[in-house]
Structure formats: C-alpha cells, structure tokens
Amino acid sequence: MARLIVWAWAFLVSLILILYVGAPVWFFNDAGSTIAGMPPMLFWFVLLPFVVPGLIAALYFYDQRAMRKLARRREKGPNR
Amino acid sequence: MSSSVILVLSLLLTFAILIVGAMLGRNHNNDLEGWLVHHRGMGSVLLWFLLGSEIYTAFTFQGLAGYSYTKGAAGFYNVAQNDVSYAVAFLVLPCIWALGKRYGHVTQADFIAHRYRSRGLGIFTAFASALIMIAYIDLNIEGLAAIFHVLGGNVSPVVGNLIGFAVLAIAVFIGGIRGNAMQSVAKDLLMFLAIAAIFIAVPVHYFGGFGKMFNAFNTRTPQYFELGKVAKDLGPTWLWSTVLLTGLGQWMWPQWFGAAFTAKSPRSLKRQAVFMPFYQLVKVAVLIVGFAAVMALGSGHPGNNVVMTMAKEIFPGWALVLIVVAAMLAAIVPGGPIVMTSASLLAKNVVQQLRPQTADRTIFWLTRALVFPLTFTALIITLWAPALIVNVLLLAYAFIAQLFPAVVVGGIFWRRATKQGVLTGLLTGWAVTGYLQLAGHDTLWGINTGLIGLAANLLAFAAVSLVTPAVEGTESVRETLDLVAVEEEATAGERRKKVTTTPRTAAEGA
Image (cartoon, rainbow over the protein chains, first blue to last red):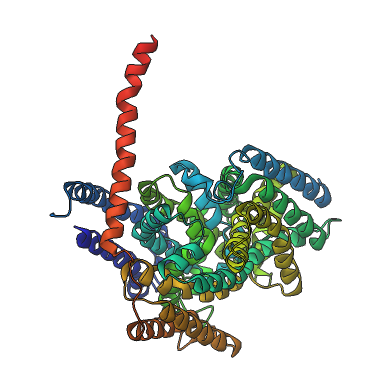
C-alpha cells in the first residue's frame, strides 16, 4: 500500500511537470496563432491553474482511502 | 492627493495592520515552540493564509510583472514552479510533519541533525541556510524600495525602508508566527483586491477592454509570448531546468519547511496542496499586467517599478493608498517568517548546539532579539547592491535547492544516505553553482546553472553515501507513511467524536 501511495504521488508530480514544461514547448510556443483570442502560451498558463487543483484533488481522494487502509493494517499488528 | 500624503497615509495604515496583527497573535508565545510553530496547532484556513503570505510576496506583486515586462514568456516559469512544488509537497510535507512531531523538531536543521545523527551537520546547514535566507529578505526590501522610488514625495527610499523594516522587526518580536498569520490574512485579502483592481483597470484604461488588449498582444508584441525571443538565453531548456530546480527547491527554504510544522495534522497539509494552486491565477494576472506594460509604458522602465507606475497613472489618491498598503504589506509581512526562521536557526541550531549548557529560555529570548540585527543586515545589503527582484530570487534558489538531496532524497526515501554524503554533496553543489555564477553564467548550454550544481550535488551525495557507514535507526518511507496514516486516523477520529458528542451536549443543555 505504501508503495502504491508513493507511485501515485510520483505519477502526479511527473504529469504536472509535463503539463507545465513539456506541453508549452511542444504545442504552445508559437505566437503566430491564437486560442480563445489569446496568444497560445498565455491561454495554456491561464488554463492550467484550473486543471491542476483537480488533478491534485484526485490524488487527495485516492490517498485518503489508501491511508485509511494503511492505518487499519497497522492497527492489526506486524503480521499484516 | 500629493505623493507625500499618499506615502505617509499608507505607512500609517500598514503599521496599524502590522501592530494589530502582532497583538492578536501574541497569546501562547511564552516559549520557542509557541512563538515559532504555534504548538503545531494551526488550522487549514490560517495555514492557507500563512503559506500564501510567505509564497506570494513583493515578488508576486511587483517582481513578476517586472519579469514579464523585461523577459517576456520566461516569466511563466514561476506559475509552473509553484504548482510543481505543491504536488511535491503533497507527500513530502506530511512525512516531515510526522517525523517532526515524533522527535520534536521545530526547524529544518533539527530535522537534518536528527536524520543523520550529526550535530555538526545541523550547525553547518543552519548557518548556511540562515545566510542564504538573507537574500529572500532582500527581495522584499527591493519591493518596498520600488514603492518609494515611484511615488517619490518627501520620504526618501532609505528612510522608508528603515522605518518599514523596523516596524516589521517589532511586530515579529511581539507576535511570533501566529501574529504573522493574522497579518497575512489582511495582507492577502488586500493584495488580491489590489491585483484584481489593477488587472481590470489596466486593459480598460490603456486598451479599452480585455479583448483589445489580447488583440494587441497578438499583433504588437507577439514575441513576448514565445520562449527565447525577448530574452535569448531564456528558451525552452531554461524553462524546464528552472522549473525543475525551483519546483524541487521551494520547500527547501527553511521558513516554508518550518510552516509544515505549524499544521494541526498531515491531512491539512494535503488539503493545502489541493487549494494552493488557485493562488496561481493571481500570478497569471500579474504577468498579464507586465505584458500590458510593454505597450502602456513603452520599454526602458526599471522592471520592479512598472506595477506602481501604472497604478499611479490610473487610480485616484484614496484607491492608490489602498494599493500602496497592499504592496507594502506584501513586501513586509512575508519577511516575518523568514527573519524568525533565520533567527531560530542561528540561536537554536548554532548557538545552543555549540554551547549546550545555554538554557531554553535564554535561546528563546536570543532568537527574538536576533530578529533586529538580521533585518538590519538584509537592509544594508539591499541598499548596497540593489537588483531586479526575480534575479535575487533565482540566485538564492540556485543555492537553497542544493538541500534537496539531504532533506527529501536522504531524509525520506533513501536510508543509505549518510552525513558524509550530504556534506560532500552540498559543498559540491554550492561550489559548482558559485563558480558558474561568478564566471557570469546564469545558464550553461541553456540550462539553469543551479540545476547543474544540483546534478553534481546528487552524484557526490550518492557516491560518498555508498562508501560510508549507514546511519542506524532511521525510518523507511513505509514506516514514515505509517506514522502519517496513524496521525490522520487519530485526527479523523477526534473529529468524528466531536460530531457525535456535540448534539448530545446541546440536548443536555436544553
């Protein structure tokens, strides 16, 4: 269970890194076009602060359930 | 309303907020744990304001707009940095909290000294990070100075800075961390209002609306929205390397690391990680104001001054007073925890470790007294070597992020890490970064030189740790997560108990 919690967290950190430094460079570093009337780079950085809390919230709910299981296993003792 | 009247009124209002906040927070400040981490009892709302206040500073209010104004799209790095660091914090801070509660840590140096069973390493990291933190106080003083530069009047920037930071030192001395959290509530609310007002007024005043402003971005300054166009050396490679360095390094600042100890439970820290990214919208708004300033003011203004210059052009006197108060609080309030942490590192982790016979009470008072000379030192450095706010921050990050292997890699995940590995890694990282910076390289092959230092640090840290004896009795990440889980269950149990007993008590009362 602890390993799953760490992997889920590492996945989230990697995903947010890619969204913030991969996507802008690959898809939005072009001032020639516009998205929703804005330069693409600006559009992306306006969008992400709304998306990221949702991603972290998803981890929050998964983690809450996993932590409860972890606490219960610990209560049962070392032969888990 | 003349500039002098605006400045004096703003100073008076700012001081009133600082003193009232300090007085409200002065309860429970009778020992170091109360003064510094509020006996680990801060709830989610106050913690949100405290963390927000420490992270969103004069840098956000003035420095970031100055960066997008002078460097273009490179300014977006800062939006990315904080969100990456919140994701990092989701697991790291609760682990540090749980270990801190178990062993009674109140500072980062306590954590390092205990984890590596080395008093000497604790003293070394405490002293080094206290020095690096002075740079963070500096950038806030730069922010305060920018206000005086723009508004002019009869109050000179030197006198204004002296008065401002003298009041901060007094407020910190009285109020401790809880007083600072109280001041943070006023500061954050005012700062949000001020940024919202500027964000709405700038497009209306200079462009005739948001649509026209965005259209002007597309047609008149498109180069500002492509990496590596306005600032040639700040391209895509710089972006990812800087976000990685600063995102990993953010929680290495001892004052933010210390904020983790103030939380009531690990779950309230996780909740912060969910909600803190909403603060980033404020940063995006400030960046947009900086981009707009390129057309509104023309190029050539000092970056730090653009927000206040536009505010002065747009708003009537009474509104400008409120904006100036917000900017002053944004410069002064975040300085509080930095000065407090720096003082506690020097008193508790350097002086008391070198002279163990010193009583806890003496250390408590020494910590509070050190607030004054530390603030004064930062002020002198700023007056002697003024700089662009973001440049000060990036340089400081390059050095503080070198603590990442010691605190996170070895502190939580890798039990094989040793004190020799940490020391070698730190010295290597600082030497590489320092050498490259002194040689005039902010970047090397487009990569942030702080990250090159961190890579060298990690290599040395791992290699030396593997050939030196392991530290006995440290927790594995599994054991630490067990601790976190138990603490969370205990807090949830208490909450459930409260919910079930409250109606009965009410019924009994009736």
